[in-house]
Image 1 (cartoon, helix red, strand yellow):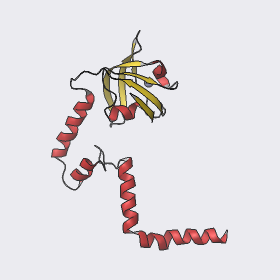
Image 2 (cartoon, rainbow, N blue to C red):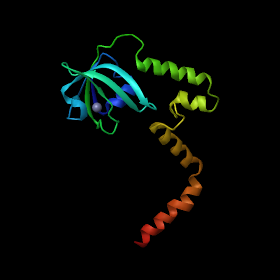
Image 3 (cartoon, rainbow, N blue to C red):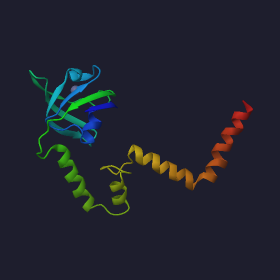
Image 4 (spheres, rainbow, N blue to C red):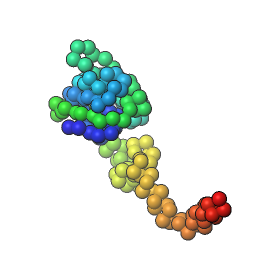
Length: 157
Ligand SMILES: [Zn+2]
C-alpha cells in the first residue's frame, strides 16, 4: 500500500503501520527508511506523537527514536504482514476506550468525534472545525473589529 506525502509516525498513529510490516520511504530520511525496514516492535516514547521503533533492515536490528520532524514528509510504501496479536495500536485503542469511561461530557464527545486527542488537545481537524464555528458565532464582531480594519489599511496602501 502506497501512502502519499505522510510520515511514519502519522501512519503508526492511524494504524496503517503495524508490527510485522515492511516500510519503505520514497526519499532518504533518517535510519535508512528509504532502503526498507521491517517493524519488529513499536513503543510510545512521549505522548502519542513520538515512537520508538525497533526494526531490522534485513541484516541488523536497531532502534529508530526519530522525532516526527526528522522523519520528513514523503511517500511511504507499507507491505503489510502484520500479525493479529495485540499490537501497540490496538493497546492504544484499548487505553483510549478505557480513558473514555472516566471522561465526562462534553470532553467525551469531543474525543469521540475526533475534535480532541487523548491529551484533550484539539486535533488538526478539530482546530479547523472549532475555528470555523467560532467565526460563525462571532462573525459580526470579527468583521467590525478585525476584518474591516484590515480592509481599511489595505485601501490606504
Ligand atoms: Zn530513526
